Length: 284
Ligand SMILES: [Zn+2]
Image 1 (cartoon, rainbow, N blue to C red):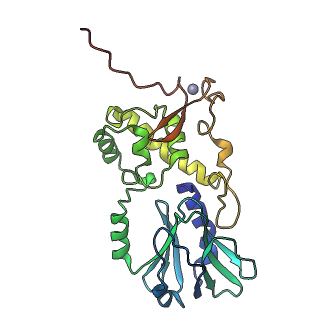
Image 2: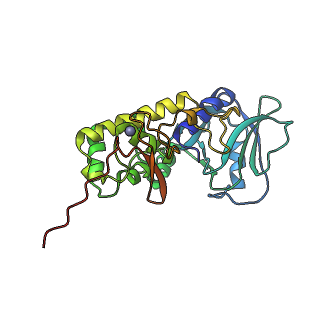
Image 3: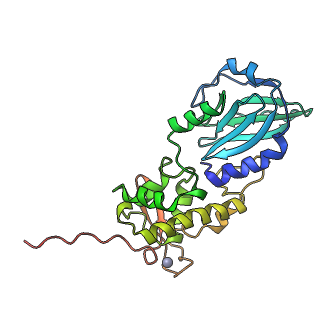
């Protein structure tokens, strides 16, 4: 599943190919439903519109049009948004094709498992409402330190689950949660409310650090992810904990262990990330 660094990489790849380009036609390919329905009614609002900006919010890709509307794309598990020569055969599972005014170029959206979607949102106010309805939390690079500490203090859930909660911090998925906890030396099963202020600060910095590093490596290539230019990522070679069960911890050489937390695998170093203290049974 593409996480924030992969989505950011795609946006950076697409930006020079899309900004300033006009959409000359839109084609819906096939009839299989995406996670949110694509409406043919939107075609009239898209054709002849110019793309002014390409950016990211959480795991959403946002293309701002000169009409003030936004074409908003989520890649779900297996979505791809790429610019291809119009002559290239359509990939299987292509759902949308946008012809660009640069002759012979197309923006294409494909998605095998169809957990992704593309929607047209009419203006900035509707986009704000959309993010609010999706309960999209703050970006991980500008978390307010006091608000971050408070949001951890406020919940008895385990810290790993909190990191994956898009309402607390947007864009962090399993891989980067595992890596951030390793870097901050926090066990994934610690209760968020037991995390000390200093540890919360360390975790906040680790999240930003891990994500920045991953973006510099163009994200991680797990299964079928490719950036918007079709190149794959390289951060999977930099993982310190994720997927490294039984391999030595890069910090202390203790074999990396794995626990299931909230149904997701969490790799950690048993020495660097000590387990939370269990309450001692009371004496009779
Ligand atoms: Zn270690």
